Length: 362
Image (cartoon, rainbow, N blue to C red; front, top):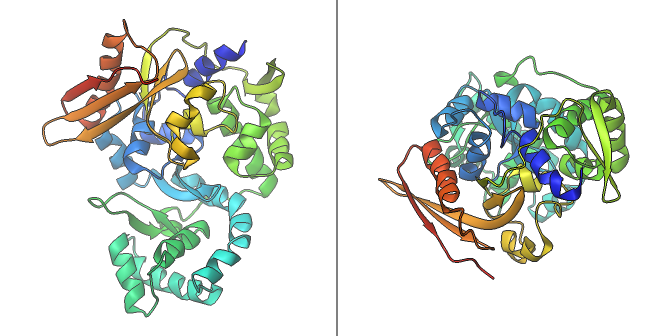
């Protein structure tokens, strides 16, 4: 394997190309977790890896509690399998909450206030109820707990990180919240070392070829812990040194498609965010176009032959989805494949396609 091959293998292992998975919950379980702070992008990350995936199908999996959103990896919101949420959270919670003291002080929040919030949420949400974000904020305000100046968001983050609440299906444009213990009363419990091994068993088959440093970054754990997890997962893995770095992947990984097909992947997709080192698929000269100013906002990506070669944007209208593509290089001769890729997204959202390809940006 050479460095140029890494993208082809990752696309196949992430199930973006080749054999896709049947259900949204299958995708999330296979990937371990998928970055999900941009909801409309994140549902497409699932759809792009699903056989005949539709937005309605992903949202039904959310409604049924098969998948949820919470903050397990690096304190960032992800889609995770509901049954795995608790042990994934426990891997990061101690570190994240221990480091939260300064922010708590800035917001004039205390452990005692959080305990009051937990009592309020448990009372209001018990019995399988879900409340929207505005309803949760109103609940806090009525109890005399201010939600102003990021306090409301931080309370939600803290109690989700603590395993009290989770983010459920959307209600219109609003998040909803429920009690994690009620959704998954018999949640799987894992000792920390076992959890590290289990996470490595999810990460390397789905994200490989990847390095131990990629895994440590993705999981938000120390490199020593990542090595411990990798050691436990090694019987099912192979390694190969590529450009001087040791990469790991599943021993039974599928053969990749080394064709030059065009793919439209969402912003924040695991194809890019799943790794500390992204240079194998994103040329350095284009990195600022994907994350302008290193502002943490990852734009949706055009991928050709495993390489990120452009961005795209969509606008949902009443009668169509408008897709505008901005390549960094000329896509001359690949126009039909570009439109086919855009059509896949239109099929996912269930709307006719209106597509426009802009001239290549320098």
